[in-house]
Image (cartoon, rainbow, N blue to C red; front, side, top):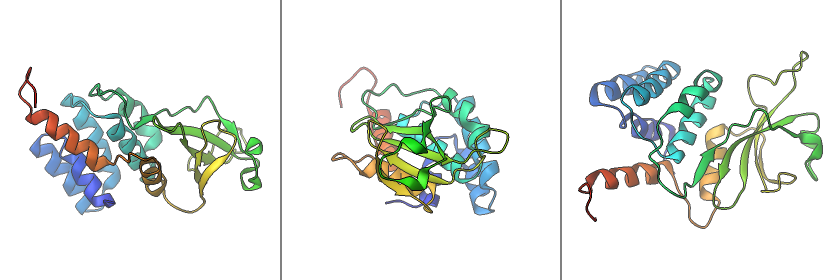
Length: 201
């Protein structure tokens, strides 16, 4: 499993060299929030096509550094590379919540709201963010936990009570018989770029 800094450098490599250098400098000086804004802005301005795995990874990084709400729309706007049968899909269904009270055999989620976030297109499991309700009815800005739900969304496959979003996302990628990682997605993209246009590999 690759670490956060390696993932960051892989994603920055999507950008033109000058922008990639600036993005990596943000990591080096501890300005990850600013670096994420630059990364997503660079992908959009350079019209870089990204895989759905990369799109989900960008959302996970944004969640990790507290920028998910501000960057979700722009991450969704990034152009897809159109590859069939993606490993995961960013669903981000804030309007289709699952009540923690309906989850079987886990009362620790009672009173909380589960937000469908990233789905595995191979097994149907869904990574969800678990939020508390604020006094005024809105969801808490930060997630309390992360859970991987079974396809029917009534039972938990795994609860991440204290682990970060990145660990939960990695578990989704590695949970199927045919695991796919961010490094796999980047390697596949590089392979496609090396192929002659209109020809066979």
